[in-house]
Image 1: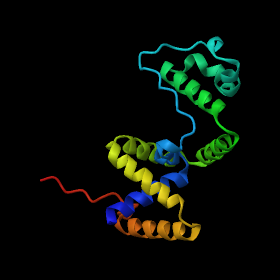
Image 2 (image 1 turned 90 degrees about the horizontal axis):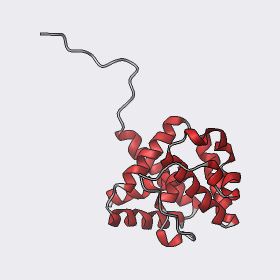
Image 3 (image 1 turned 180 degrees about the vertical axis):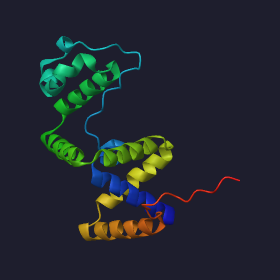
Image 4 (image 1 turned 90 degrees about the vertical axis):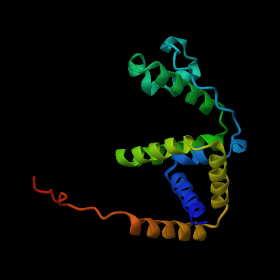
Length: 174
């Protein structure tokens, strides 16, 4: 039970950061199937080959487009395609998540990326368990969410090693 609680809290904290909410979202809840990722051998995309909608959404990358890796270009085009098919509510949710992401420090972003990667490396059954627990967490009233978050932070701050400003003592050479 303790392990399940830790997973629930981790999923909830991920969702609070924005990025992991997409990782923890049940597959059935997605209203639009994501296009397949470009294969690693896919070549670069010409800016002129993009659709007008893709150009409009990716205009902020126009000056750098030819400098991006082909993999990054395909990833951005796939994201633009998903965004263009999204409902107004999904677009608003995306904008809110993007704003939260932009406010994060580089260290916070890196932690989230690492958590996301760790989630992706879990067995499918464990991913599904986390998705189910995340859904249950999302259905909780705000007060209960706050209690769980405080309990999680209390339990994990007590087990985390204290940060020291002094370097660790060195053993003298023998």
